[in-house]
Image (cartoon, rainbow over all chains, first blue to last red; front, side, top):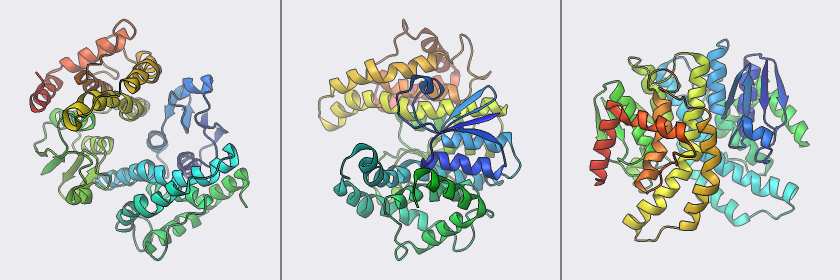
Length: 213
Length: 213
């Protein structure tokens, strides 16, 4: 029996939801929030982050570690490319998306979405401006040069495609969308990733859970 | 032909040096420093971090991504466990070591080693105190409960063992050593990891390059 710990709205939880859905694995979904200080959850994940996953007596943390495990333990419908070099390229882009790109995009989300809703604070618009004008553009240029004109990065839709979309689902909740005039390939690519049946369903469920129309 | 970009002294570069050595792969080692703003290097690694690696026409960043690639492309002398669940456990501990644990241990290193040497600044001893007394202990407790009394985590010495040592090589340069009275298993474990012939040679070469006796 698989248990997923992690709340809707996390770009990292979304990756695992995608993999579980593609592989048609049944699981119990516990809506765990990150950084609550909950001592019971700290026993599962010493960093207090989400997602974590239990599969039998195996407890894992970190979305990439979890997704790699699920792909190896349940190999039907692979979510990483089969070729060794392509798999390495996919892992690097997943890492880039999940580290600095998410830091910036989730920064916008934190300021404009989380702060007003949960902390009754105004967003730091100067920080948002810096992210949008200085910090994200070189990374968007790097991604723009790598995503394909048509289709997905490595044949069929895989986890790396979803990983590149995930941070920008959060920034879109906070009113920031990648500029299609400046990064047209990446914007069109993200539209394709979003429009597949699995991602469409996951994003609809998440929006409903978050109370976003 | 393999090219490794990354300076001696980085806990992440050290991991890749270990894997290259175990697999007896020849490579060119470019002593690239991180975050120099060098535009040529930013084309290789858009984050300016180290290590990066080139193997033929494949360019990769991130130590974990690089090590996983090397293990799959050059499977002799594996550096990850063969069993799926153990491999996932190893990846999670490698991720924990390379994220928060390195952040804290490298924080001590940055304050006490890099700041005085390269920035002519005093270390922030209050920050170091917070790391040592508050931030590291719960993570050291978590690691202490998982490392074995004898031998290594998954049979022979593998990358996860080295990954857990790496942050504390840096903190030791800065005068912080894990307390053997409080975390005896982990301290003994690190001694075993350090004393193997490959790690002994890598650590000696690094100390010589850094001018540490």
